[in-house]
Length: 65
Image 1 (spheres, rainbow, N blue to C red):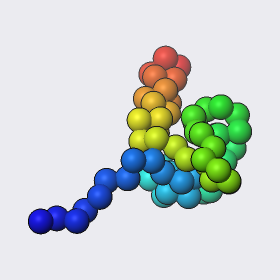
Image 2: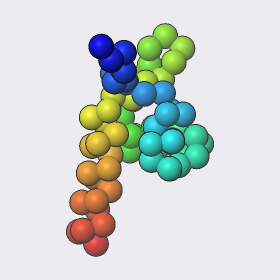
Image 3: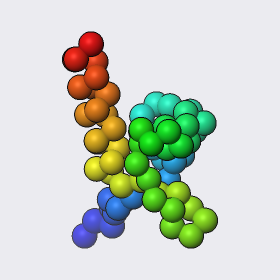
């Protein structure tokens, strides 16, 4: 039996690693609304599908340019 758990949401630091960004860039993307997030108590959390949405939007912008 495997005990591998898939995260249901990510911290900004985890998203930074996933996207290859610095933490300050991820926080800026959140502040400007480019990357969706929620506040859970004192923590900021990002759903995996919101990371996918951000990537998809970036690809669409590049293809439209």
